Amino acid sequence: MSSLRHIGKYLVRYWHLIALTMVLSVLYVFLNSLSLWMVASLVNTILVNPDEIPVKPVDLSTATGLHEYMKYWTHNLIQQSTPLKTLARLCWILLSVFAAKNVALYLKNLGSGVMENRLIRDLRDDLFNHIQSLSLAYFDRQKTSEISSIVLNDVAMVRRAFTVSVQRLLVEPANLLVFATMLFIISWQLSLLAIPLIPLAAIFTTQLGTRLRRRARRTMEQIAGVMEVLQENLRSIRIVKSFVREDRESRRFKHENQRYYYLAFRRFILNHLNAPVNEMIGVATGVILLWVGGQQVLLGRGVGPEEFMSYIIFLFAMV
Picture 1 (cartoon, one colour):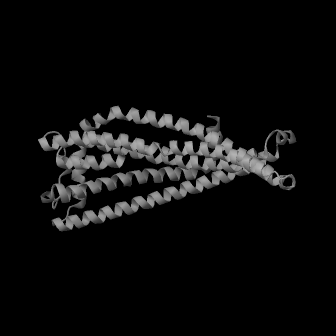
Picture 2: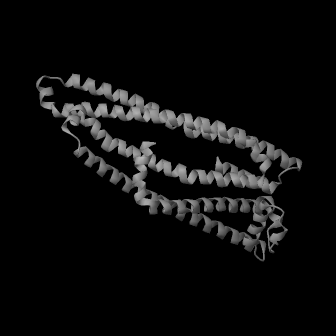
Picture 3: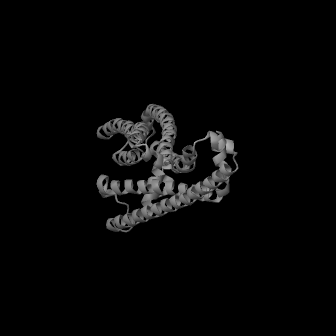
């Protein structure tokens, strides 16, 4: 928590960029959900109910639920005098929504990138000034390679962590919340089937994150050992060559480098395990809902074909 408070003091300086990024993130999430809704409308219009392409406005007051209200609103938005004109209008709206969504995404990433680089710049400046104020006794106790590793590698790791945190704290939760809301609006019965699997994914992600942080800390400590051997060798290269110690120095460096490789590879394995396992949990959930919902459509009970198609599009976009 102390580290988060320390980073928070730097973030306060760029509150305007944080506010702008949050607004753009909300706009991106809204446009992303709207684009999926329009894709579902296009699929339903062409594949599911081609004979029911809207050519006349629908009275919104006749809607019996939120999902039906959104459906009627979409019909009024795209309806034209002929089915072909309605389809053309839907295609243009879909193109416009996707264009606006990607502009919002670009501006969000741009604002986040400016904030991130300014944060790292200030962090390195303050860290260097702090090093200048330390006593000579500190430099006698501390290895030069460890100090260099903190200034270069640890700060670089803060940058990567900051980038991932912005994505996970702003965009992904909002996307999941909106998608989950849409799924419940379309069919709350099907959505309830997925709730028991959510804690499974959360437990796995939490445990994996804990192990990743531990591996990352060990990796950064080990790269400092590699840098220490390298700097010692470069500082005393004349002595090494005078006493023909090249083989011994090579073995020392190889030993430290092998340990770093082992830790980095273990971290790589854990890091790339998260996405496929979470995806398989999501796909398994989707298959269960596909089987149950598909049975309801084929047997003519529960959700209809149009609602089920919209549900599947939002479900696999969420996965």
